[in-house]
Picture 1 (tube, rainbow, N blue to C red):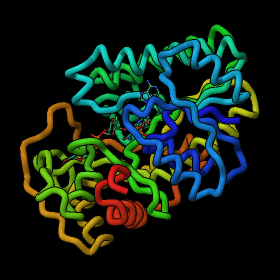
Picture 2: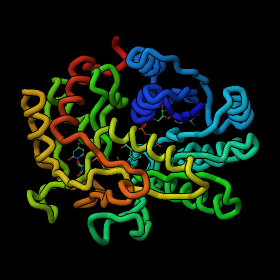
Picture 3: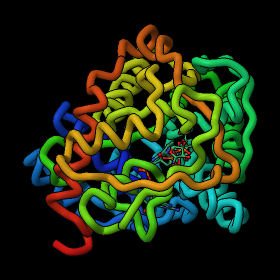
Picture 4: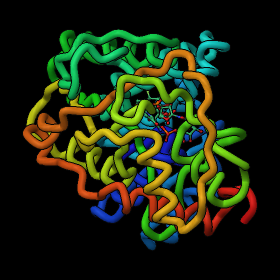
Length: 337
Ligand code: NAD
Ligand code: UFG
């Protein structure tokens, strides 16, 4: 039984599909602060299998302990957390409470229940402003915002835990920029309010929910002056979690691995690719740089290949086609079904 915190969210729901398809049983533990139960109904529809759902908050230790015990969890995939960089600057205590305190409680509950196997959602944000590209896992760690700090603190907490007890199995996965949706078009990213991230914003322009995209800066030291990122299909990312679980089965260990494609695309590359995939125009305007943004960020993805036997398979056209299928099927996301 795999215990998935935050399993109703964007990456969690896609990972649940792949876990179920691979024959795992899945318990989702989610407080629905940024998701809806409907996502899990869709997961059941796609897979024809049942998801065991427990509504709860990872900061609630007794409920967590009870949930881990009763479902017979063998491993945890820990997605639950808040993830908006701008919001984290305005509400740092909320982010430390939810992300750091929540993970602390989760690890305490796991320790009590003897479940010492965890895959954690970290982020390329822990590399700060890259000193060299592509980013390898031994690049110095630093952050520029409270959200990133919470990821870094949690990574340190996990490494300290492993050093105190080497029977733990810990996989830290540093995601680059997850985009796209399941090929069925039934589940996808459903941001609340104005999307912070590029692809959901572009998709909402294409579907007519927004007038134009603000391109934050066209004077970066990149081929076309706009920011370059490593976009990875969310289904490839989901497979990376299964690969990490398999790796952790071999022996106790604590590993940190990038999940990216190794390819960087600019904002304008993304606009053009989405226009092609959707057949819709995506109007945009150049605006000043967004505070805290970096010029370029892309992974060296070779360690994931070496350690996990994993590499991304879906190209940019597939990412955009799948994102568009979801967006055009459900222009208002899960809310208006
Ligand atoms: P998401 O917001 O869609 O999913 C997070 C889920 O966790 C939601 O279902 C939410 O309701 C739940 N949750 C939040 N706080 C909780 C709590 N205290 N108790 C129980 N449930 C709680 O986000 P996502 O994009 O799927 O991201 C998943 C993880 O991956 C997060 O930890 C995020 O920081 C990390 N990550 C995401 C990205 C990205 O660009 N999407 C990049 C790098 C890392
Ligand atoms: N961008 C725009 N207009 C928008 C939104 C984004 O031009 O409306 C640009 C940004 O300036 C950047 C690129 O598109 O150049 C990507 O921006 P995102 O906000 O989609 O992604 P980031 O790389 O800034 O950050 C994301 C997550 C972070 C995570 C990081 C690395 O939001 O939480 O990827 O995983 F840490």
